[in-house]
Length: 208
DNA sequence: TCGTCGATAGTCT
DNA sequence: GACTATCGACGAG
Image 1 (cartoon, rainbow, N blue to C red):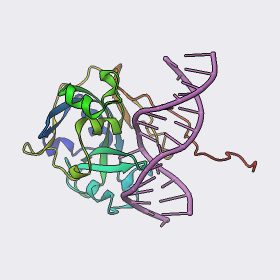
Image 2: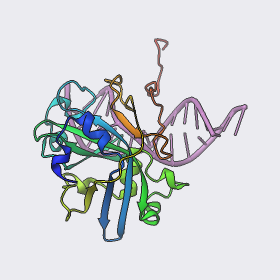
Image 3: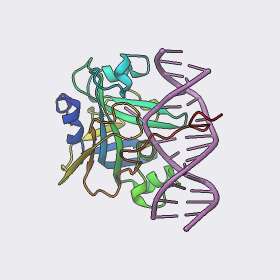
Image 4: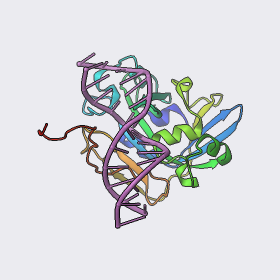
């Protein structure tokens, strides 16, 4: 994978990443997976769901850096999620890695994800994917297109068919069909597509 | 097998 | 002080 391959519009680059490999090399071993589901987040202002929407805040600064870098953020106080920065430097667009199929190092991935009962659950969901790969805060800003990096992105065979639909887990701009997945892949996350936003605890309506 | 609910802390207003 | 690009446990059928 070269940085030039990531320069196009984010909603064009995102589906092109399906079928690509994400590889992590650690002292304890290597894990590689094929991407089966991604989401596009644009930094150009028309996407209020993006972390880049409010400009280069300290957290989102990496999104405005050069393409091919890894943007890692902490979610819900519990999980880490990983994005690939795409587009020209300064634009602030990124692709969220939502799901994949582990093809190398399944045993190591299982040891990192003891809750996964079957293979397809190892990287089904963005936080699970980062766990299976062993990606964490130390990998913020990692250069995915540098072959000496501990986390790398490789070009792979494109899937036979790609589906598109609304993004998951957000409450803004849910009409944009910027979630892309490999059609009929068993490892695609299944979290309430088109879903109703989950309400927090407490009275929903006016009754006290 | 499916639907519902709580945990938890960094980030921004 | 409110919110969040989620996960896994648990109960009912």
